[in-house]
Image 1 (tube, rainbow, N blue to C red):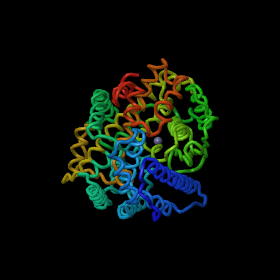
Image 2 (image 1 turned 90 degrees about the vertical axis):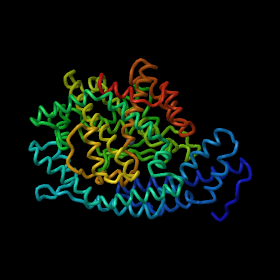
Image 3 (image 1 turned 120 degrees about the horizontal axis):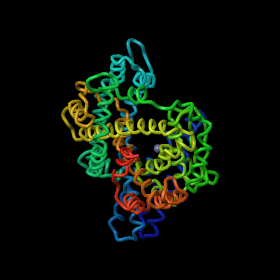
Image 4 (image 1 turned 180 degrees about the vertical axis):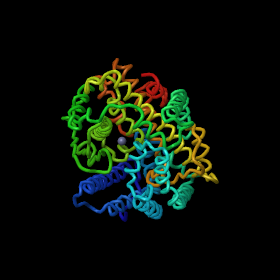
Length: 506
Ligand SMILES: [Zn+2]
């Protein structure tokens, strides 16, 4: 910015922050629209050029220095909070907008996209391979499918290690010991907090998990389960109602009805649903917060599609009603917090009352659904703990990541792992570093909030729930730190107690 002038008082500082916010909001809206148009096959602005426009603001040293120097002054708390979130966003940009890192991650992503697994001499897509793992009764073929998928990890391991080292170097430039320390600081999370949650979930589900491992061994007639048995057990051994019982035409009307039962009115929200063949189940694209929110989806029949779309509608509600007076403050909550709000609505589709009212399911069928979800979740959370702890260890330069993973699998999943298992094919390590925990935190936050809703209104969902969620979590955006919001809404800090209860008791 050639016309930069150092603010000389609070009023000028606020004017500078307002101007940054306004420009970022404008670029953000154009980027969201370009992203949306790309997904729908419509001509769009160049995303890389838009990224450069935002980098020009976020990497501007004069802004950065000004924010840093004002942060240590005695100022009204609201302004200090705003400066704190600007500080965090500008720090993140030093990593996110680094051209060398971006190029390296891109190169790896291209290898990921080009990778085509081969099973018994036949090339398959990765989703076909997933289907084999879910449905193939021949165990030896399932093992070959599992290993075929892991070949990606072998292919990109050196590149991904290089990416980890690159991120560590950038973190060091910003004064952090490793990228883990920096990344968790920027996500407003503490490693000790996550470790506690992992252990809480593990303890709460220990008996159930051991029972599940024995049941897998018994049903499959094997001495102990291996990684290629889990998906098959969940999808082909555990009973579940047919997907035709959950017609896709019912999803939107059903959400409208259940949102009304929560005290919300979908017709009053600026949300549009567009059916389109996209590579995700569903995607909420806020073009302009509070004004223009679009949900893209390509639903099919099946309960999981109700689950996905209730989740996306949860994001839609969030993006519709957040205070947008400051763009960076509106985006100031950590990712998991956004997921947690979506989770409060998503969990409706897991409730026995919902399954009974909407689909006339019997107690037996409901018990099947609950059991299947539970096993999937418990395995999922254990996998998350493994993925996070391995990722942290690699950033902290553990000498032998494969050995480390072997030990984690033995201790956390309770199986005899494949020898020197490959790890680098977990694409989140490339595309979304330090992200796995958010899928656990989402359910921790959602179930804790659901418990609070039950305490306040007697049931979940309840007519007061919509306002409860919007008032406590959404409206203020990042003006209030997430820990305060959760403590005020639920009466305690984030804990996995409620999640443990849902996984074992109902
Ligand atoms: Zn989400």
